[in-house]
Image (cartoon, rainbow, N blue to C red; front, side, top):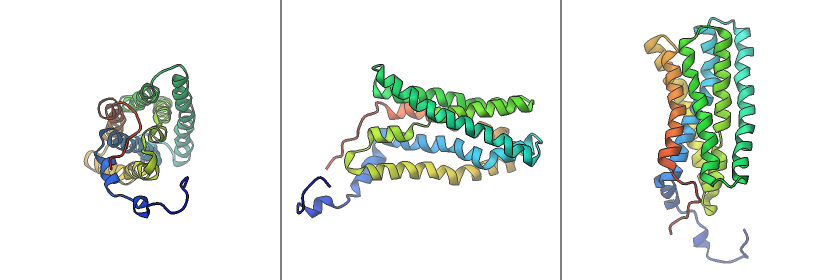
Length: 220
């Protein structure tokens, strides 16, 4: 848009090789995988959490409706806090990688706490642990900040679109996978382990796959 009229129209055409570059780049692929795993937590709370409260914990539908809103409120607060922590670390001179990864790792560690619900019975404790897990998910939800840090300036829209695509795939797979787990086991125990494992995979991806967070330079 900054260029005057004319120019080489051919150079302005989309290059599908860019898509391959994003999907084969270790850092961007790790970011996309992380978003899929993180959104697994989101879609668990959106789809199966109220069912968990009614079927597994014996709450009334009305009570479950109120209770299910509490983790979402905590996730809202966590989302704001995660951004504040990341910006604070940058101001204190931490590297971009550290400023993004530290809140993500801390948040996802908190999210894995939901597995503890398999070993407690008190309703108030269950709700508290789930609220803590969604709070952690909010802290760790810095994916769009990382995408803005890493996307090639020429194809920021394509990179963001892929990021969304991977994240939204979790909306398809999470309800189905949990449904199969419940059918096979008759319990939510395995489902909570599955969701907690996805939170842990976000940590693994950012620490072992993503590497240094930096802007991708396109080839060709």
